[in-house]
Amino acid sequence: MKIIESIFIFIQDQILGMKWLNYLIEQFLTMLGFDITTRFGGSIQFFLYDVIKITILLCTLIFLISYIQSYFPPERSKKILGKFHGIKANIVSALLGTVTPFCSCSSIPLFIGFTSAGLPIGVTFSFLISSPMVDLGSLVLLMSVFGVKVAIAYVIIGLIIAVLGGTLIEKLHMDQYVEDFIKNASSVEIDSPNLTRKDRIEFAKEQVSDTFKKVFPYILIGVGIGAFIHNWIPEDWIKAILGSNNPFGVIIATLIGVPMYADIFGTIPVAEALLVKGAQLGTILSFMMAVTTLSLPSMIMLKKAVKPKLLALFISICTIGIIIVGYIFNVFHIFLIS
Image 1 (cartoon, rainbow, N blue to C red):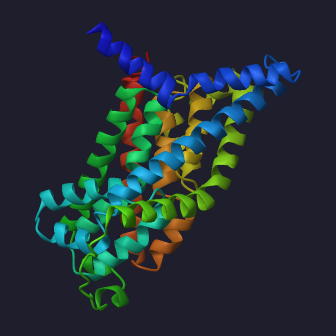
Image 2: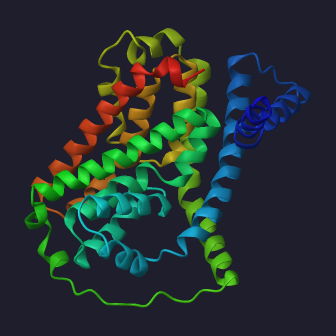
């Protein structure tokens, strides 16, 4: 049992957490004459370590997930979802969302395509909620920062929100609030291409290149904010606003996260810095969920596809679900963060 535990710790600390990289950066900066115990030196170390670590994980994850995704093009996904009904369809849709692009803006075109193809509105919304919130990348990245227990719990609860949210929208018969041009769009049946292994590898490489260009600026911004929080903002301030003594911390974090635009790779360094400064786990995860699921640009895009009543219901479901999840994680903070 101890051997298995040691293997897990090694994977979390050295492979996912890359503590060896942090040590190398520390030695490199010391050799250059930087004092990493100062705020300035510590900020540089945090920035270099997180940018390099997240970039390595980003490129590796995008390649692997894109390779998997090559087996689930939109046409095949439509056929798979069309075979299921009721809550089973919502569950499958939410699971399919885990192998799709990393940000909500990338998920909306697929959501529109699924809706145009005649899939039930609740099923497509389960996909839309799940896709940016609980992709496979979030699982690995959360493991690298918070550990296996937190990562698995986050993904499971995210999928539950997606399934329940889609089911509620379906039960309320919100089909009439989808814009007419989407409902009336003709669905063209396209057979999924028979890709060779070489084709799939090339597709994965292209996805790495395209996604990296889109995401890297947000990584720099997120890591920069994280470095600032980590080294310059007093711990007492963070605890006062987002700590256990503020019962409204989860709500504040969620509302702050909604208008922002980033993906899981941009929010992780901010979350990491907040945790070190004493913010509650659930409060941090609520912030991350709000940023990745309810970003302002994605809501503007979605507004073109659905009418205000359905958009408001979607935002309300996600916001309430995220806040509830935040309070649940705060209750179990002590058991999940060792």
